[in-house]
Length: 152
Length: 198
Image 1 (spheres, one colour):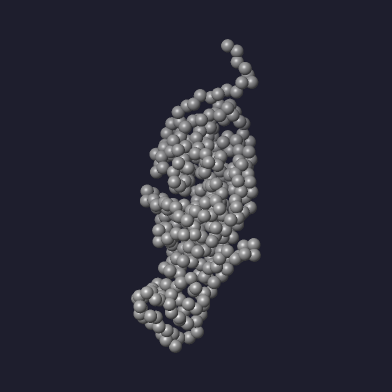
Image 2: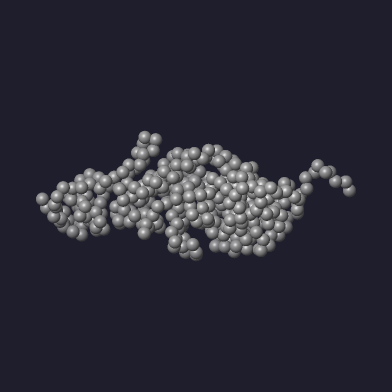
């Protein structure tokens, strides 16, 4: 069987375990640096799905990524920070959400948190609860480090 | 000159000159014309004794682009600083997040500020309640988030794009939650959670 080296590889969909982490990029414009509390520093809009109207929040799975690699996927990495969630917490939180692996050709770690509003009447509670579950991995003003984007 | 209020339960207009003796008394509701000389009073009392010269409640105007958005009594003018901090929202242009997010409309921001002015003023005037200082941030889909976070609870009011409707959410950081929606121009403030200033 011949393989076309130019043909993009489709990664298989895998199961994300409860113990795994998910990384979310936060743009510097979604951070209030005047707020002393590190978690309250995150403006709730940071947890709004993109593009507008979508019900899926894009994240990177820790099995195939890490905070640094996730940050480097941003258009302007130096303008982004990274927070993490435990898959268990998202699945078992007050607003239970689903977490699924949805690999992309250019990003095997890509995963989604979904069942997010606009199905619900309001998305405010969802955004606040996700903020509660988040943990800082890289702050927006942390300097970029040299890293090799090695294959996984 | 003694002032007097009709004892009838239906009529309640009166005239008093000395305000400072009364402005802290919760049983004296003050109607919209507080900056004038007309006060409305409830039917639970029949007359006041007047003395001295009326001192009006000082009001400060919040002005944006040469237009007055609203005014607040001195005791609530600390909110102006919060309004000013939120002006950054109007500087968020399209693609402000490097992922194609849209900018924000002035009308939405003005609506959020007007809501805060009217809401805080009515709570202070009618119940002698001073709301806490809020954080005013850009929200999803062109909306504005108004957030109060205290040690024990948080309250978020989201003013939708173009500023006609709003949603609110409040919790105790745990499983006590209340949420709902209302129209900016027509709502019953008693049905909204209140962010008290301690």
